[in-house]
Length: 176
Length: 201
Ligand SMILES: Cc1ncc(C[n+]2csc(CCOP(=O)(O)OP(=O)(O)O)c2C)c(N)n1
Ligand SMILES: [Mg+2]
Image (cartoon, rainbow over all chains, first blue to last red):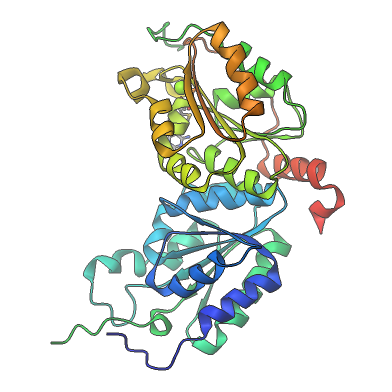
């Protein structure tokens, strides 16, 4: 059961921002929070949505995309940030732009204790790996924050991560 | 101290193999893995080559992103067996994605030569070409002889689809070649040559 009751519009807002930013390659390891966005990207003939075996592949893939003149975005949940650490050296050393959208677990009403380790360290791990980290905790601000992060990533050649708070994404009610 | 000659199954010479591949590059775009593959390709430096000096495991996936962005160009990844083993999942991702213009060449000395000549899994029976085949690559083979190499290089540039060549080479080590190692510079040089002024939009 999800806490959230109103229909969610923020995934559609992100998709519209991708269109504005001319994102052509979208790499992802699925997270429930990104379900709708992944479907939208898969259905868009101007985008290539690539399913990864591990998040770090996406860092390398989108660096290759940029080499070839394409903009991209990497979707993951917070546990995926840990998988990216060494690969982020590629973005840092080469100043590759990288837009990462990370749906958070392990921070708001989490029921699964295994999510806490990465959820509670995602921001610090990314910052220590050379990323600019921006959070969004209000559903109506998601589109705006992702656009701002994208503009910064692609025009300053930096890795920018947007953490989408678990309060927005929703959590399972674990009470009996 | 340089480790002694190792007993590996390959007989081809890595510098010769990479030289012959690059000689026919035409307008192909090249990504190298870190270490020896970078130095092999560096002997024939070209702005259409992106050299990885780190990010072990990145080469194949950089090739995929580049191949998707530049569908009209052939993209050739040249990397080591150790580097490929660190990114084995990439084979599955590439096999699932099926770009029409991506080739991966593993310079397989069955060793982590760069770090002291320790055996890799390919020295212990792991067959990378079979794994690539299983991932759905259009063409995947192990290359052991001069004769096979000639044919394989032609296929690498002409096959529509995904090509994987595991080229068995000797344990011979060579000195570093290229000194260009600043990542941002390698990236900017590559993009400017490929995209012109649009590289700095
Ligand atoms: C994440 C990571 N782990 C380990 C290393 C150390 N390292 C550098 S090169 C290398 C071996 C590469 O082996 P291979 O790709 O087979 O190249 P070779 O030198 O044999 O041609 C290793 C283990 C590293 N750079 N990064
Ligand atoms: Mg090796």
